[in-house]
Image 1 (tube, each protein chain N blue to C red):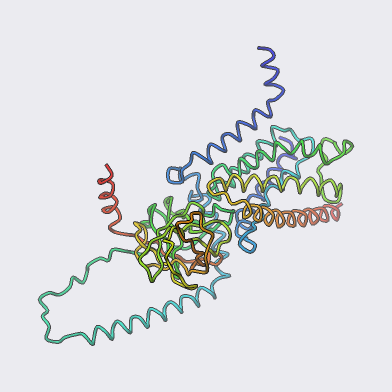
Image 2: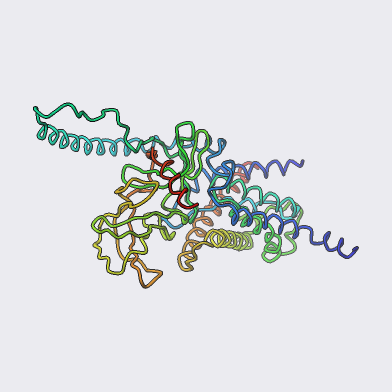
Length: 172
Length: 280
């Protein structure tokens, strides 16, 4: 196993713990909850094996589901986002960025990265809410929730990403 | 055949993803929460343990508030006790017969098991609570859960030391309820708009209400009659023109919920069996 894979699995574990122990206790104004764990999909190297990305997405979603008693919901949403990761990357990043282990970040390719993360988070949130709301469908309500949760998730992701980069930069 | 193999090889990632997504959707739709294995819920021993550990840190932040609430509750019970004692002594007749002494060891129908909330998730419409009491403490599925202020939810799964609860603020929750000052029953559910408010639906059109009216539990196999659920806070949009719907401000604050009581109904099995036997 490559060292990078171990690092990535540790990142997933940390994000899962953060999600269930901290993020799911937050409910901003009773409507918005940050769904932070999807961040790991944006921080995998661009050239990662698609099988690996999809499997990781499914497993992380499944573990989150067990913690939150929502069988299949997070697993389905995260697997679909993992599949869409490659097409979305092709859409937002220029071809010169496509190195094997290029990890996108807010400082390294800010504009493209921001657009990419916004697309991923919006997709993930929409999937989560529409899968979760099958039983009672209230469109305005669902849209407000998607908006609120996406906003707070994005703020957190960009904050964490800029902090991580500063740490890496000061170590070098 | 070769074309088929080629096709499978070329689109293997897609096929793989479709299989995983299909499996997830199977879980979403097929798993009635009552039939699900306890290992796939937050009541399993690993997640239960983790939640319990994180909760033991979190409870310190609520000590002050909980202490105050307990004192308030204590004061209220104390004054009630005083009134009851007063009544008892006033009506006590010294020459009344002692031949028909009441059975002093008669067990009451309801027993309360105190428990602590070790986890509450806010994940859109499917919120769940994990409690730190399980089968070993006498907790069984279908028991009601209340806080000091009002109704919380219903136990749906219990493992040896933990149990998972569907709270009012879950889309799947349904409860028969009524206004304190009327005899008409409605159905309480949650529309997912915010965690302070639930909806009381299917009340007759002529039902009058005032803001602040108390909403109580009515016929239910799970809760005793007359427990506070919340207070009417306004008129809600009705799905059906023949019925009224009200917004109900929930008595329980799910943000700060810490200590709850699980209601054990000693007649539950008996009543359940009787009702089952009618159905057959």
